[in-house]
Image (cartoon, rainbow, N blue to C red; front, side, top):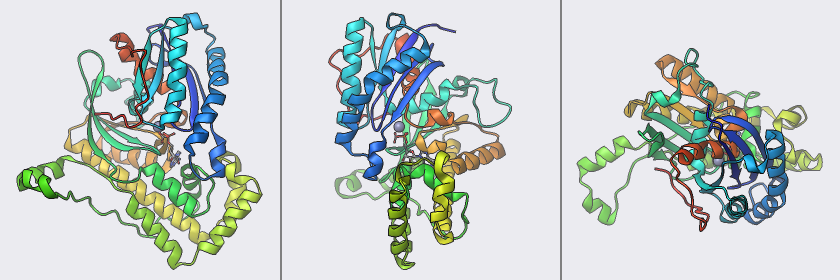
Length: 401
Ligand code: KG4
Ligand code: ZN
């Protein structure tokens, strides 16, 4: 095992994280400080996120170094998230990483956050979801279909291993409106759940009937307009349709809102929201407070939550496997905050086992934003001496593939 140490720094949204990873795989430390302040507003407030990163970055970094039991001189490179993300939040991590790399005279590596999510899985090569595959490396399974599904992104990538040990990514599908995690969070907010709502929806769904409310996802149709229509022949359009696996989550959000209105659920939602807040539960996590929060929910709301979860996870599963089949992927990897979802993991694992396709998820800790995945994604760049200039700046809209 290679012994070079990379310090990763991640500040793209509302988690301040620093990690030390050896040889691109062995996590020596991975400290994540989640910003609770946003719970009071029901969503991430960008200015507050930047301020909280500024507060947290030094203590988080010190703790990561202490837990890893290494000194600054032992580090071989500093990796930082370049984008995508919130401009001010990214700026804190990048400015800090640049100053740190300069002061220590170590190379700086810029990492795409989305590639980080993919490497969260690749790093954990011994963690495949399907049994009997633990001894095989994911590198041997190229091309892979990667589903990156989080609060900011819902993307499908075809990841191909290229000879210089790095990966080539082709974006083969993405959400045309909300990200899946965003839909979870918005529906959760609509129903008066604590923020972020995704983990709460997941925990509460287990107490409802997933078949109670039948939600449907319409197939995405590509519309050609103006010049585009003139340029694209019908044949080309058909081809484009068949090779894209785009998704949409705004419809189900509207359907939930309509259901709430039709069933006059607003008064009970407002009462629940106020009760949770006055009990201080609006900042709680399901792992700590499910038993206290659950009694605030009636069966109708629990059924609605369970139906939403069943519908979204089935849609993601269907689309991911259709893309994997279309591109002849030899494995499927699922990453990002929503990859922590129990129902999504269950459905994808069952389907993969039926199809005999290898599948892998990161551990729950590596599913949501963290710096270990940034240090892991930096490893091939470190080997290729692909270092960032000292003029590195945030790229909030950075794309992958
Ligand atoms: O990857 P991440 O930490 O940040 C982004 O890059 O967006 O993902 C956070 C998102 C949030 O929308 C959160 O509600 C969602 O992931 N999430 C979940 C679960 N855990 C986190 N959604 C559904 N089920 C979960 N168990
Ligand atoms: Zn993320």
